[in-house]
Amino acid sequence: MTNSILLLFMLLISFRVLAFQVEPLIHSMTDSGTLANATFRVANTGEKPLAIETETYKRTVSGLDREKLTPADRDFIIMPPMAEIVPGDYQIFRVRYLGSGALEQAQSYRIYFKQLPIEDSSEQGAQVKMLFNLGALVFITPPNVHSNLSAEIKDNDIILTNNGRGVADLSEYTLSIKTSDDSVSLPWQQLSQYGSASYLVPNQATVIPISDWYELKRSPSDIAIAK
Image 1: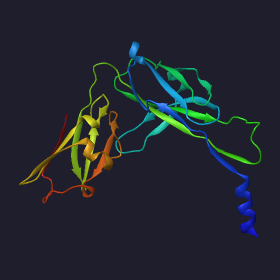
Image 2: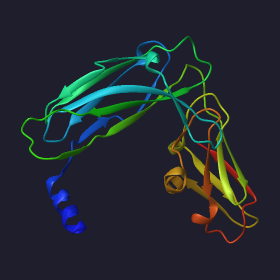
Image 3: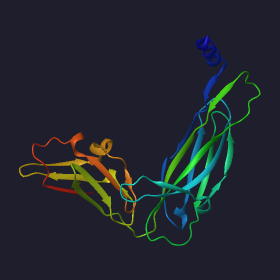
Image 4: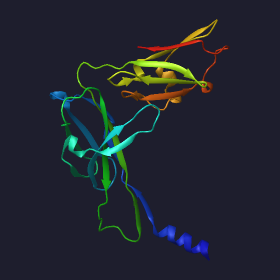
């Protein structure tokens, strides 16, 4: 009897995903001037109207800790802050960084594009709609700052740390490993699947477990990372 009721309930419920896309998902900006402006394109790839609102959060990341997000809507102007997009169409969201004065090092944010529920008079019966949020990663970098990446081996892991004041794009780097009788150089593209981050903000680190991919016969005696 219970199974029959559950089956009936499932037949009465329609699970519908209103799909949308955000481009780009990663944006680099400056803290002033024309490059303090950016645009995001949100496309409605579903079959129903799409309502979107934006929310902004500042990221705090240190070492290997997970990111912490705090509301930061006042750090940006986003126009429009909300929009309704018909199927097959798109909306351009224009973003300007305001901040609170000149920065000494790069900062990072997440701008979320949040799907809002829309009443549909054509729908009948029980409806369960899955609403999605897509977060774009935004870096705000002041002029004349640079990343400074270091590599070390600790407890059979490789730890990469950004000791500089800019953002480190790991796709630009190559890891060099030496043993007593061998060496190997690996571009980040070969290691990215083992790391937990592709970009490192100042003071952020990421871990690459050696056991997942290491093929040299002897343990590493020296390690370095460079562009």
